Length: 270
Image 1 (cartoon, rainbow, N blue to C red):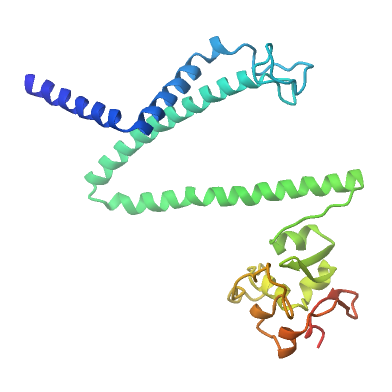
Image 2: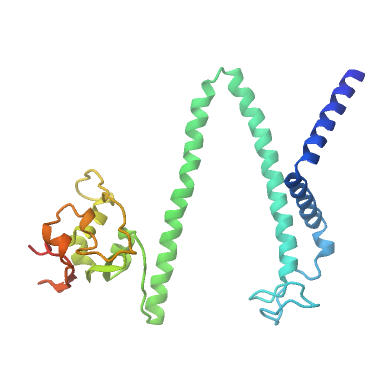
């Protein structure tokens, strides 16, 4: 028993010596202790109910509201205290659950000689896919709400995105830009069906097709140009797979094609 006690004392002493030798660690532990204490005693330290609304919206910091109020009139300092309390509670519960599950799964995996690992890995892969699926669903809901607002309020919407699938489903016109230059502009249905500029073609070729033949996805080779230097020709010439000598020496002007779209390219429409 004495030997075990001596070993425990030695370990505690070593840990304290390590903590005492690292200044950053001491500061971090002190801050963590302060945050934990504030969170534990939040109901007694909070001067106001963080969930109650009042008429003093966006009030500045003062004697009544230490950090002011938010857009709904709630005391910001009280919200921070209760927010820290909730965060620590979630962290402790999550750590406890992971510890119990980890011990249980580790014991079962060892008992079944690792045969359980392959099943668990596939189970984990399913959960890893959920955030991506939720992102897509959330994006769709947000876009739907934006379009409903546009129609209800009769306003104009401008979207800046690299996602051509979003453009195809939510926009009427599209302006394709590269390095600050307008390369192609027209109706979405025309540009999606038959892009004229090589950069627009590259963007559309990088999107997987949901209908028809599914070919290999292609990226756009090369990297963005140095914007601190004025180009002698087309801004996309270094990455263009269809470039001609003229593309490197002459800056293309905007031309209007037969379908009404505007494009800045020497080879477009040919």
